[in-house]
Every structure is written in C-alpha cells, then in structure tokens.
Image 1: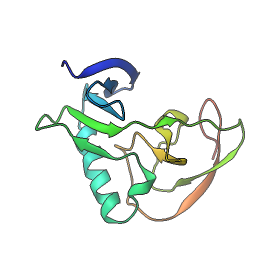
Image 2: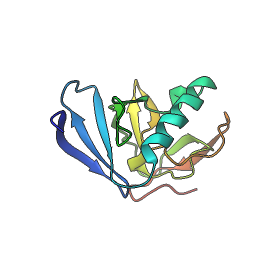
Image 3: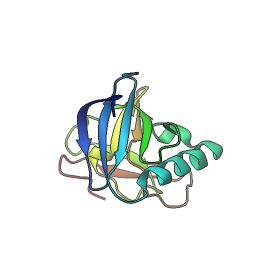
Length: 132
C-alpha cells in the first residue's frame, strides 16, 4: 500500500501508519476482527447523537474495509495521578487509547464501546493505565 508511511502504533487487531497523502490523518490497517467497521459505525452513531467531539473522526478509505483513516491526534500527556474526565461508555481506558485534538481529550481507539450517554466519570491518569 503505497499511501502508508512509517508505522506509528500497533495493537492486537490493527496497525496504525502515517498517511502519506495527508499528514493530518493516520491509516488504521486491520490485522484481525472487525474493528475498523465498528469504529466507523461508532463514529457515525456518536456524531448523530452530538457526541462526536469525544472521539477522533474517522472515515473509510475507498471500499476496502481493512483500511480506515482517522484524524491524527497528539499524544495525551497528563501528570501522574491527575484526575481526567472520560465518557462512561468507553470500557477500555488506557492512555494509549486517547489523544489530544483541538485541546481536548478524545478517544482514538473506540472499536469497543457501550451504549453512548453524556455521562462522564473521573479517573486517575497513570502511566501504566487508569485507576478507577
């Protein structure tokens, strides 16, 4: 895939690359599962419910379900032990799943999600994960 740049991250189901045609976006390439389809579906649902500002926007890249594009967020940096508000409907809160976009904390890995609500919870930011 000639549009992929340097690998910038990898999880159990996807690999994230720089998107060469536009550095404002990243490409998420599926290794296994249906995470890309879920993320597209979740973004559309959140946007329709006026909660799209809680996640980095994503979109399909053509008809290939194995690759999606997502707006590139900056790494989220907080002090150890700082309290951070996150939506209740994101069950997997670890620092690598979040980034900063336009000065606000957004989810960048939201393939797993519960029914959206506007409810938030405070969590303690830890380098090794979040303490509830």
